[in-house]
Image 1 (cartoon, rainbow, N blue to C red):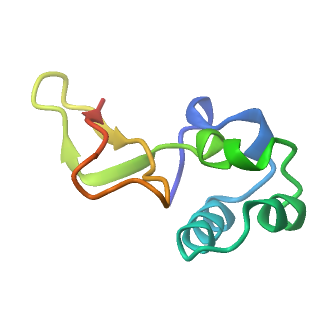
Image 2 (cartoon, one colour; image 1 turned 90 degrees about the vertical axis):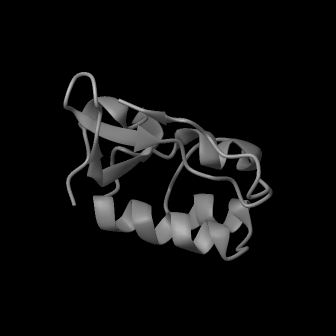
Length: 89
């Protein structure tokens, strides 16, 4: 999976796309943010971890207006299923 480097925050640019996905999975599984930040060498406050992760690319969805790939912001572990982010191009 490739990620657009313009959408990746400086704090996580040293991670590979696979490492970012693994980090996000572990985050959702409830591991402590501070431990993840230390292990992945990310320099942000623990409560800002989700904010520096790049949006997820929706590989099977194109914008109906401009025909580019669509993205969605990552869901935080405390976000309810009813409170979802809009899809963006």
